[in-house]
Image 1 (cartoon, helix red, strand yellow):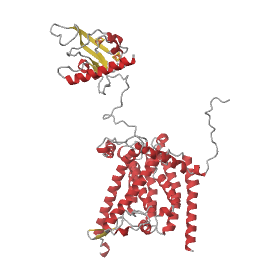
Image 2 (cartoon, helix red, strand yellow):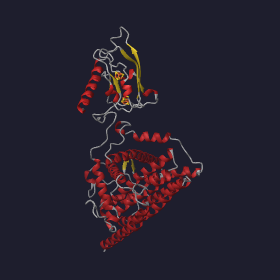
Image 3 (cartoon, protein in one colour):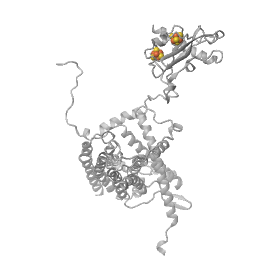
Image 4 (tube, protein in one colour):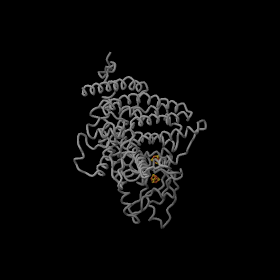
Amino acid sequence: MILLAVDWALVLEKLIFIAVIITISLVVALYMTFGERKVAAWIQDRIGPNRAGPLGLLQPLADGVKMFFKEEIIPTSSNKVLFILGPSLAMITAMLTSAVIPWGDKAELFGRTITLQIADVNIGILYVFGVVSLGVYGIMIGSWASNNKFSLMGGLRAASQIISYELAMGLSLIALLMITGSLSLGEMVKQQQEGWWNFFLQPLGFFIFLVCAFAECNRTPFDLAEAENELIGGYHSEYSSLKLGFYLFAEYINMFISSAVMATLYFGGYDILPFYDETAWGLSANLMALLGAAALFVKILVFIFIFMWVRWTIPRFRYDQLMNLGWKKLIPLALFNMLVTAAVILFLKK
Amino acid sequence: MQLTNRAKQVDRRPLNFAEKIYLPAVLKGMGITFSHIFKKKATIKFPEETRPFSPVFRGLHILNRDEEGRENCTACGLCAVACPAEAITMDAAERLPGEEHLYREEKYAAKYEINMLRCIFCGLCEEACPKDAIYLTETFAPANYSRQSFIYGKENMVIPHPKENPEAFTKAKGLIDERKAKASQQQ
Ligand code: SF4
Ligand code: SF4
């Protein structure tokens, strides 16, 4: 029975950590809806929600309660199982990615060394890619099950968009991987802690990654899948109540997670300052871990702000523009970036 | 033929690379939106703040009293005749001995109703009144659930009594004086 000798403390530790991370993502996503409305308002010279609670801070709760009490409608002509599966899948895949992101350095708690990462998988970034591309199934299944032309159209758009942009994203990442030589996100952060942040080595790659991240999250200007004007909401036009809430919420969680991924890949993750050795401060490991996690959150918030800022600045692309940008501009750019990076690495090695 | 000199030549050259990649234009747009974050907000936080009314604003009516608290209206019906929307109805009654402290004239309006859903707030009643009795104020009818509640009676419109509630009376009088001043300015 030696095989079953599991380290129960480890399991417990991970379970608690998972619960914490999921709670944090949910709360952050909740307040992102509020932030989104505030940013939109500021950009449009308005004030934004300010009635529910102090400074309007209870607004997300009010929105949630509203969603919760709406009538639940399942169209008679829909495929019930898939109809329910769609939003659940969108939500689950949105959450899954958080597993491999290193949220902070090691911390000492109750005499144990705790890594602030749920699983340091050695193929971390591939896992992220896999799960993110699964995310589109939530949209596709939901739109198919709705049995509505507009929904289906939205689903088709989402699928082809993800395929197109995943390519450019992967190519921009290959250049990054040539530099780091590792697929593990934890390893990447460690390298950036010691050396330069990857952004300074891969500015073009980062830019391509950023654009593709917008596309993968279905955010404006790439929100063709849910174009309100021509597709009356696209894939979620048949959804109501909490299932609609799940879809909308999954978008925010996706945004949060891709901000975290970008911060980790290109901006040193939980590294506090670029070009600076923080160990010189001589702080305790726990404090450093805490500061690191805070630094990561600041970076994530900045990215989230950029997501919103872009959304309220530019209108949606036309579909042919979207495809042109993806296939004819971003992919060649990513290839070019990859070749240049490879050549430079080869040259430096000689 | 040139009609004005405002014509602009449209640039129909094909997009160059920077334009095709959209980035410079997007960044420029983002600069504009970012600057708006710090601009003065146009919002008026309504119940706490209100937008100042224009000097000619015409709102709900009030019925005037004189300094001793007697109602001015004599139920002559001129306002009802003047009213283009036929919003005003009234019943006249004769003042009985002993009621001199209530009504200024021998005849008074026992019932005086304005249907605020019919009223178009033109202010002609105010202009028609020979007895300095009806004025429009700077308040508007609040929302309500029933049509009946938009028919305003005397209890909604007659201003407070100077003896019972001197403060409110002075305030209402102040409003009326302001209104008169504005009206004379316009003439
Ligand atoms: S304001 Fe005009 S419409 Fe309204 S009651 Fe007076 S006269 Fe009639
Ligand atoms: S309000 Fe004026 S015009 Fe109308 S009935 Fe009374 S006194 Fe006559």
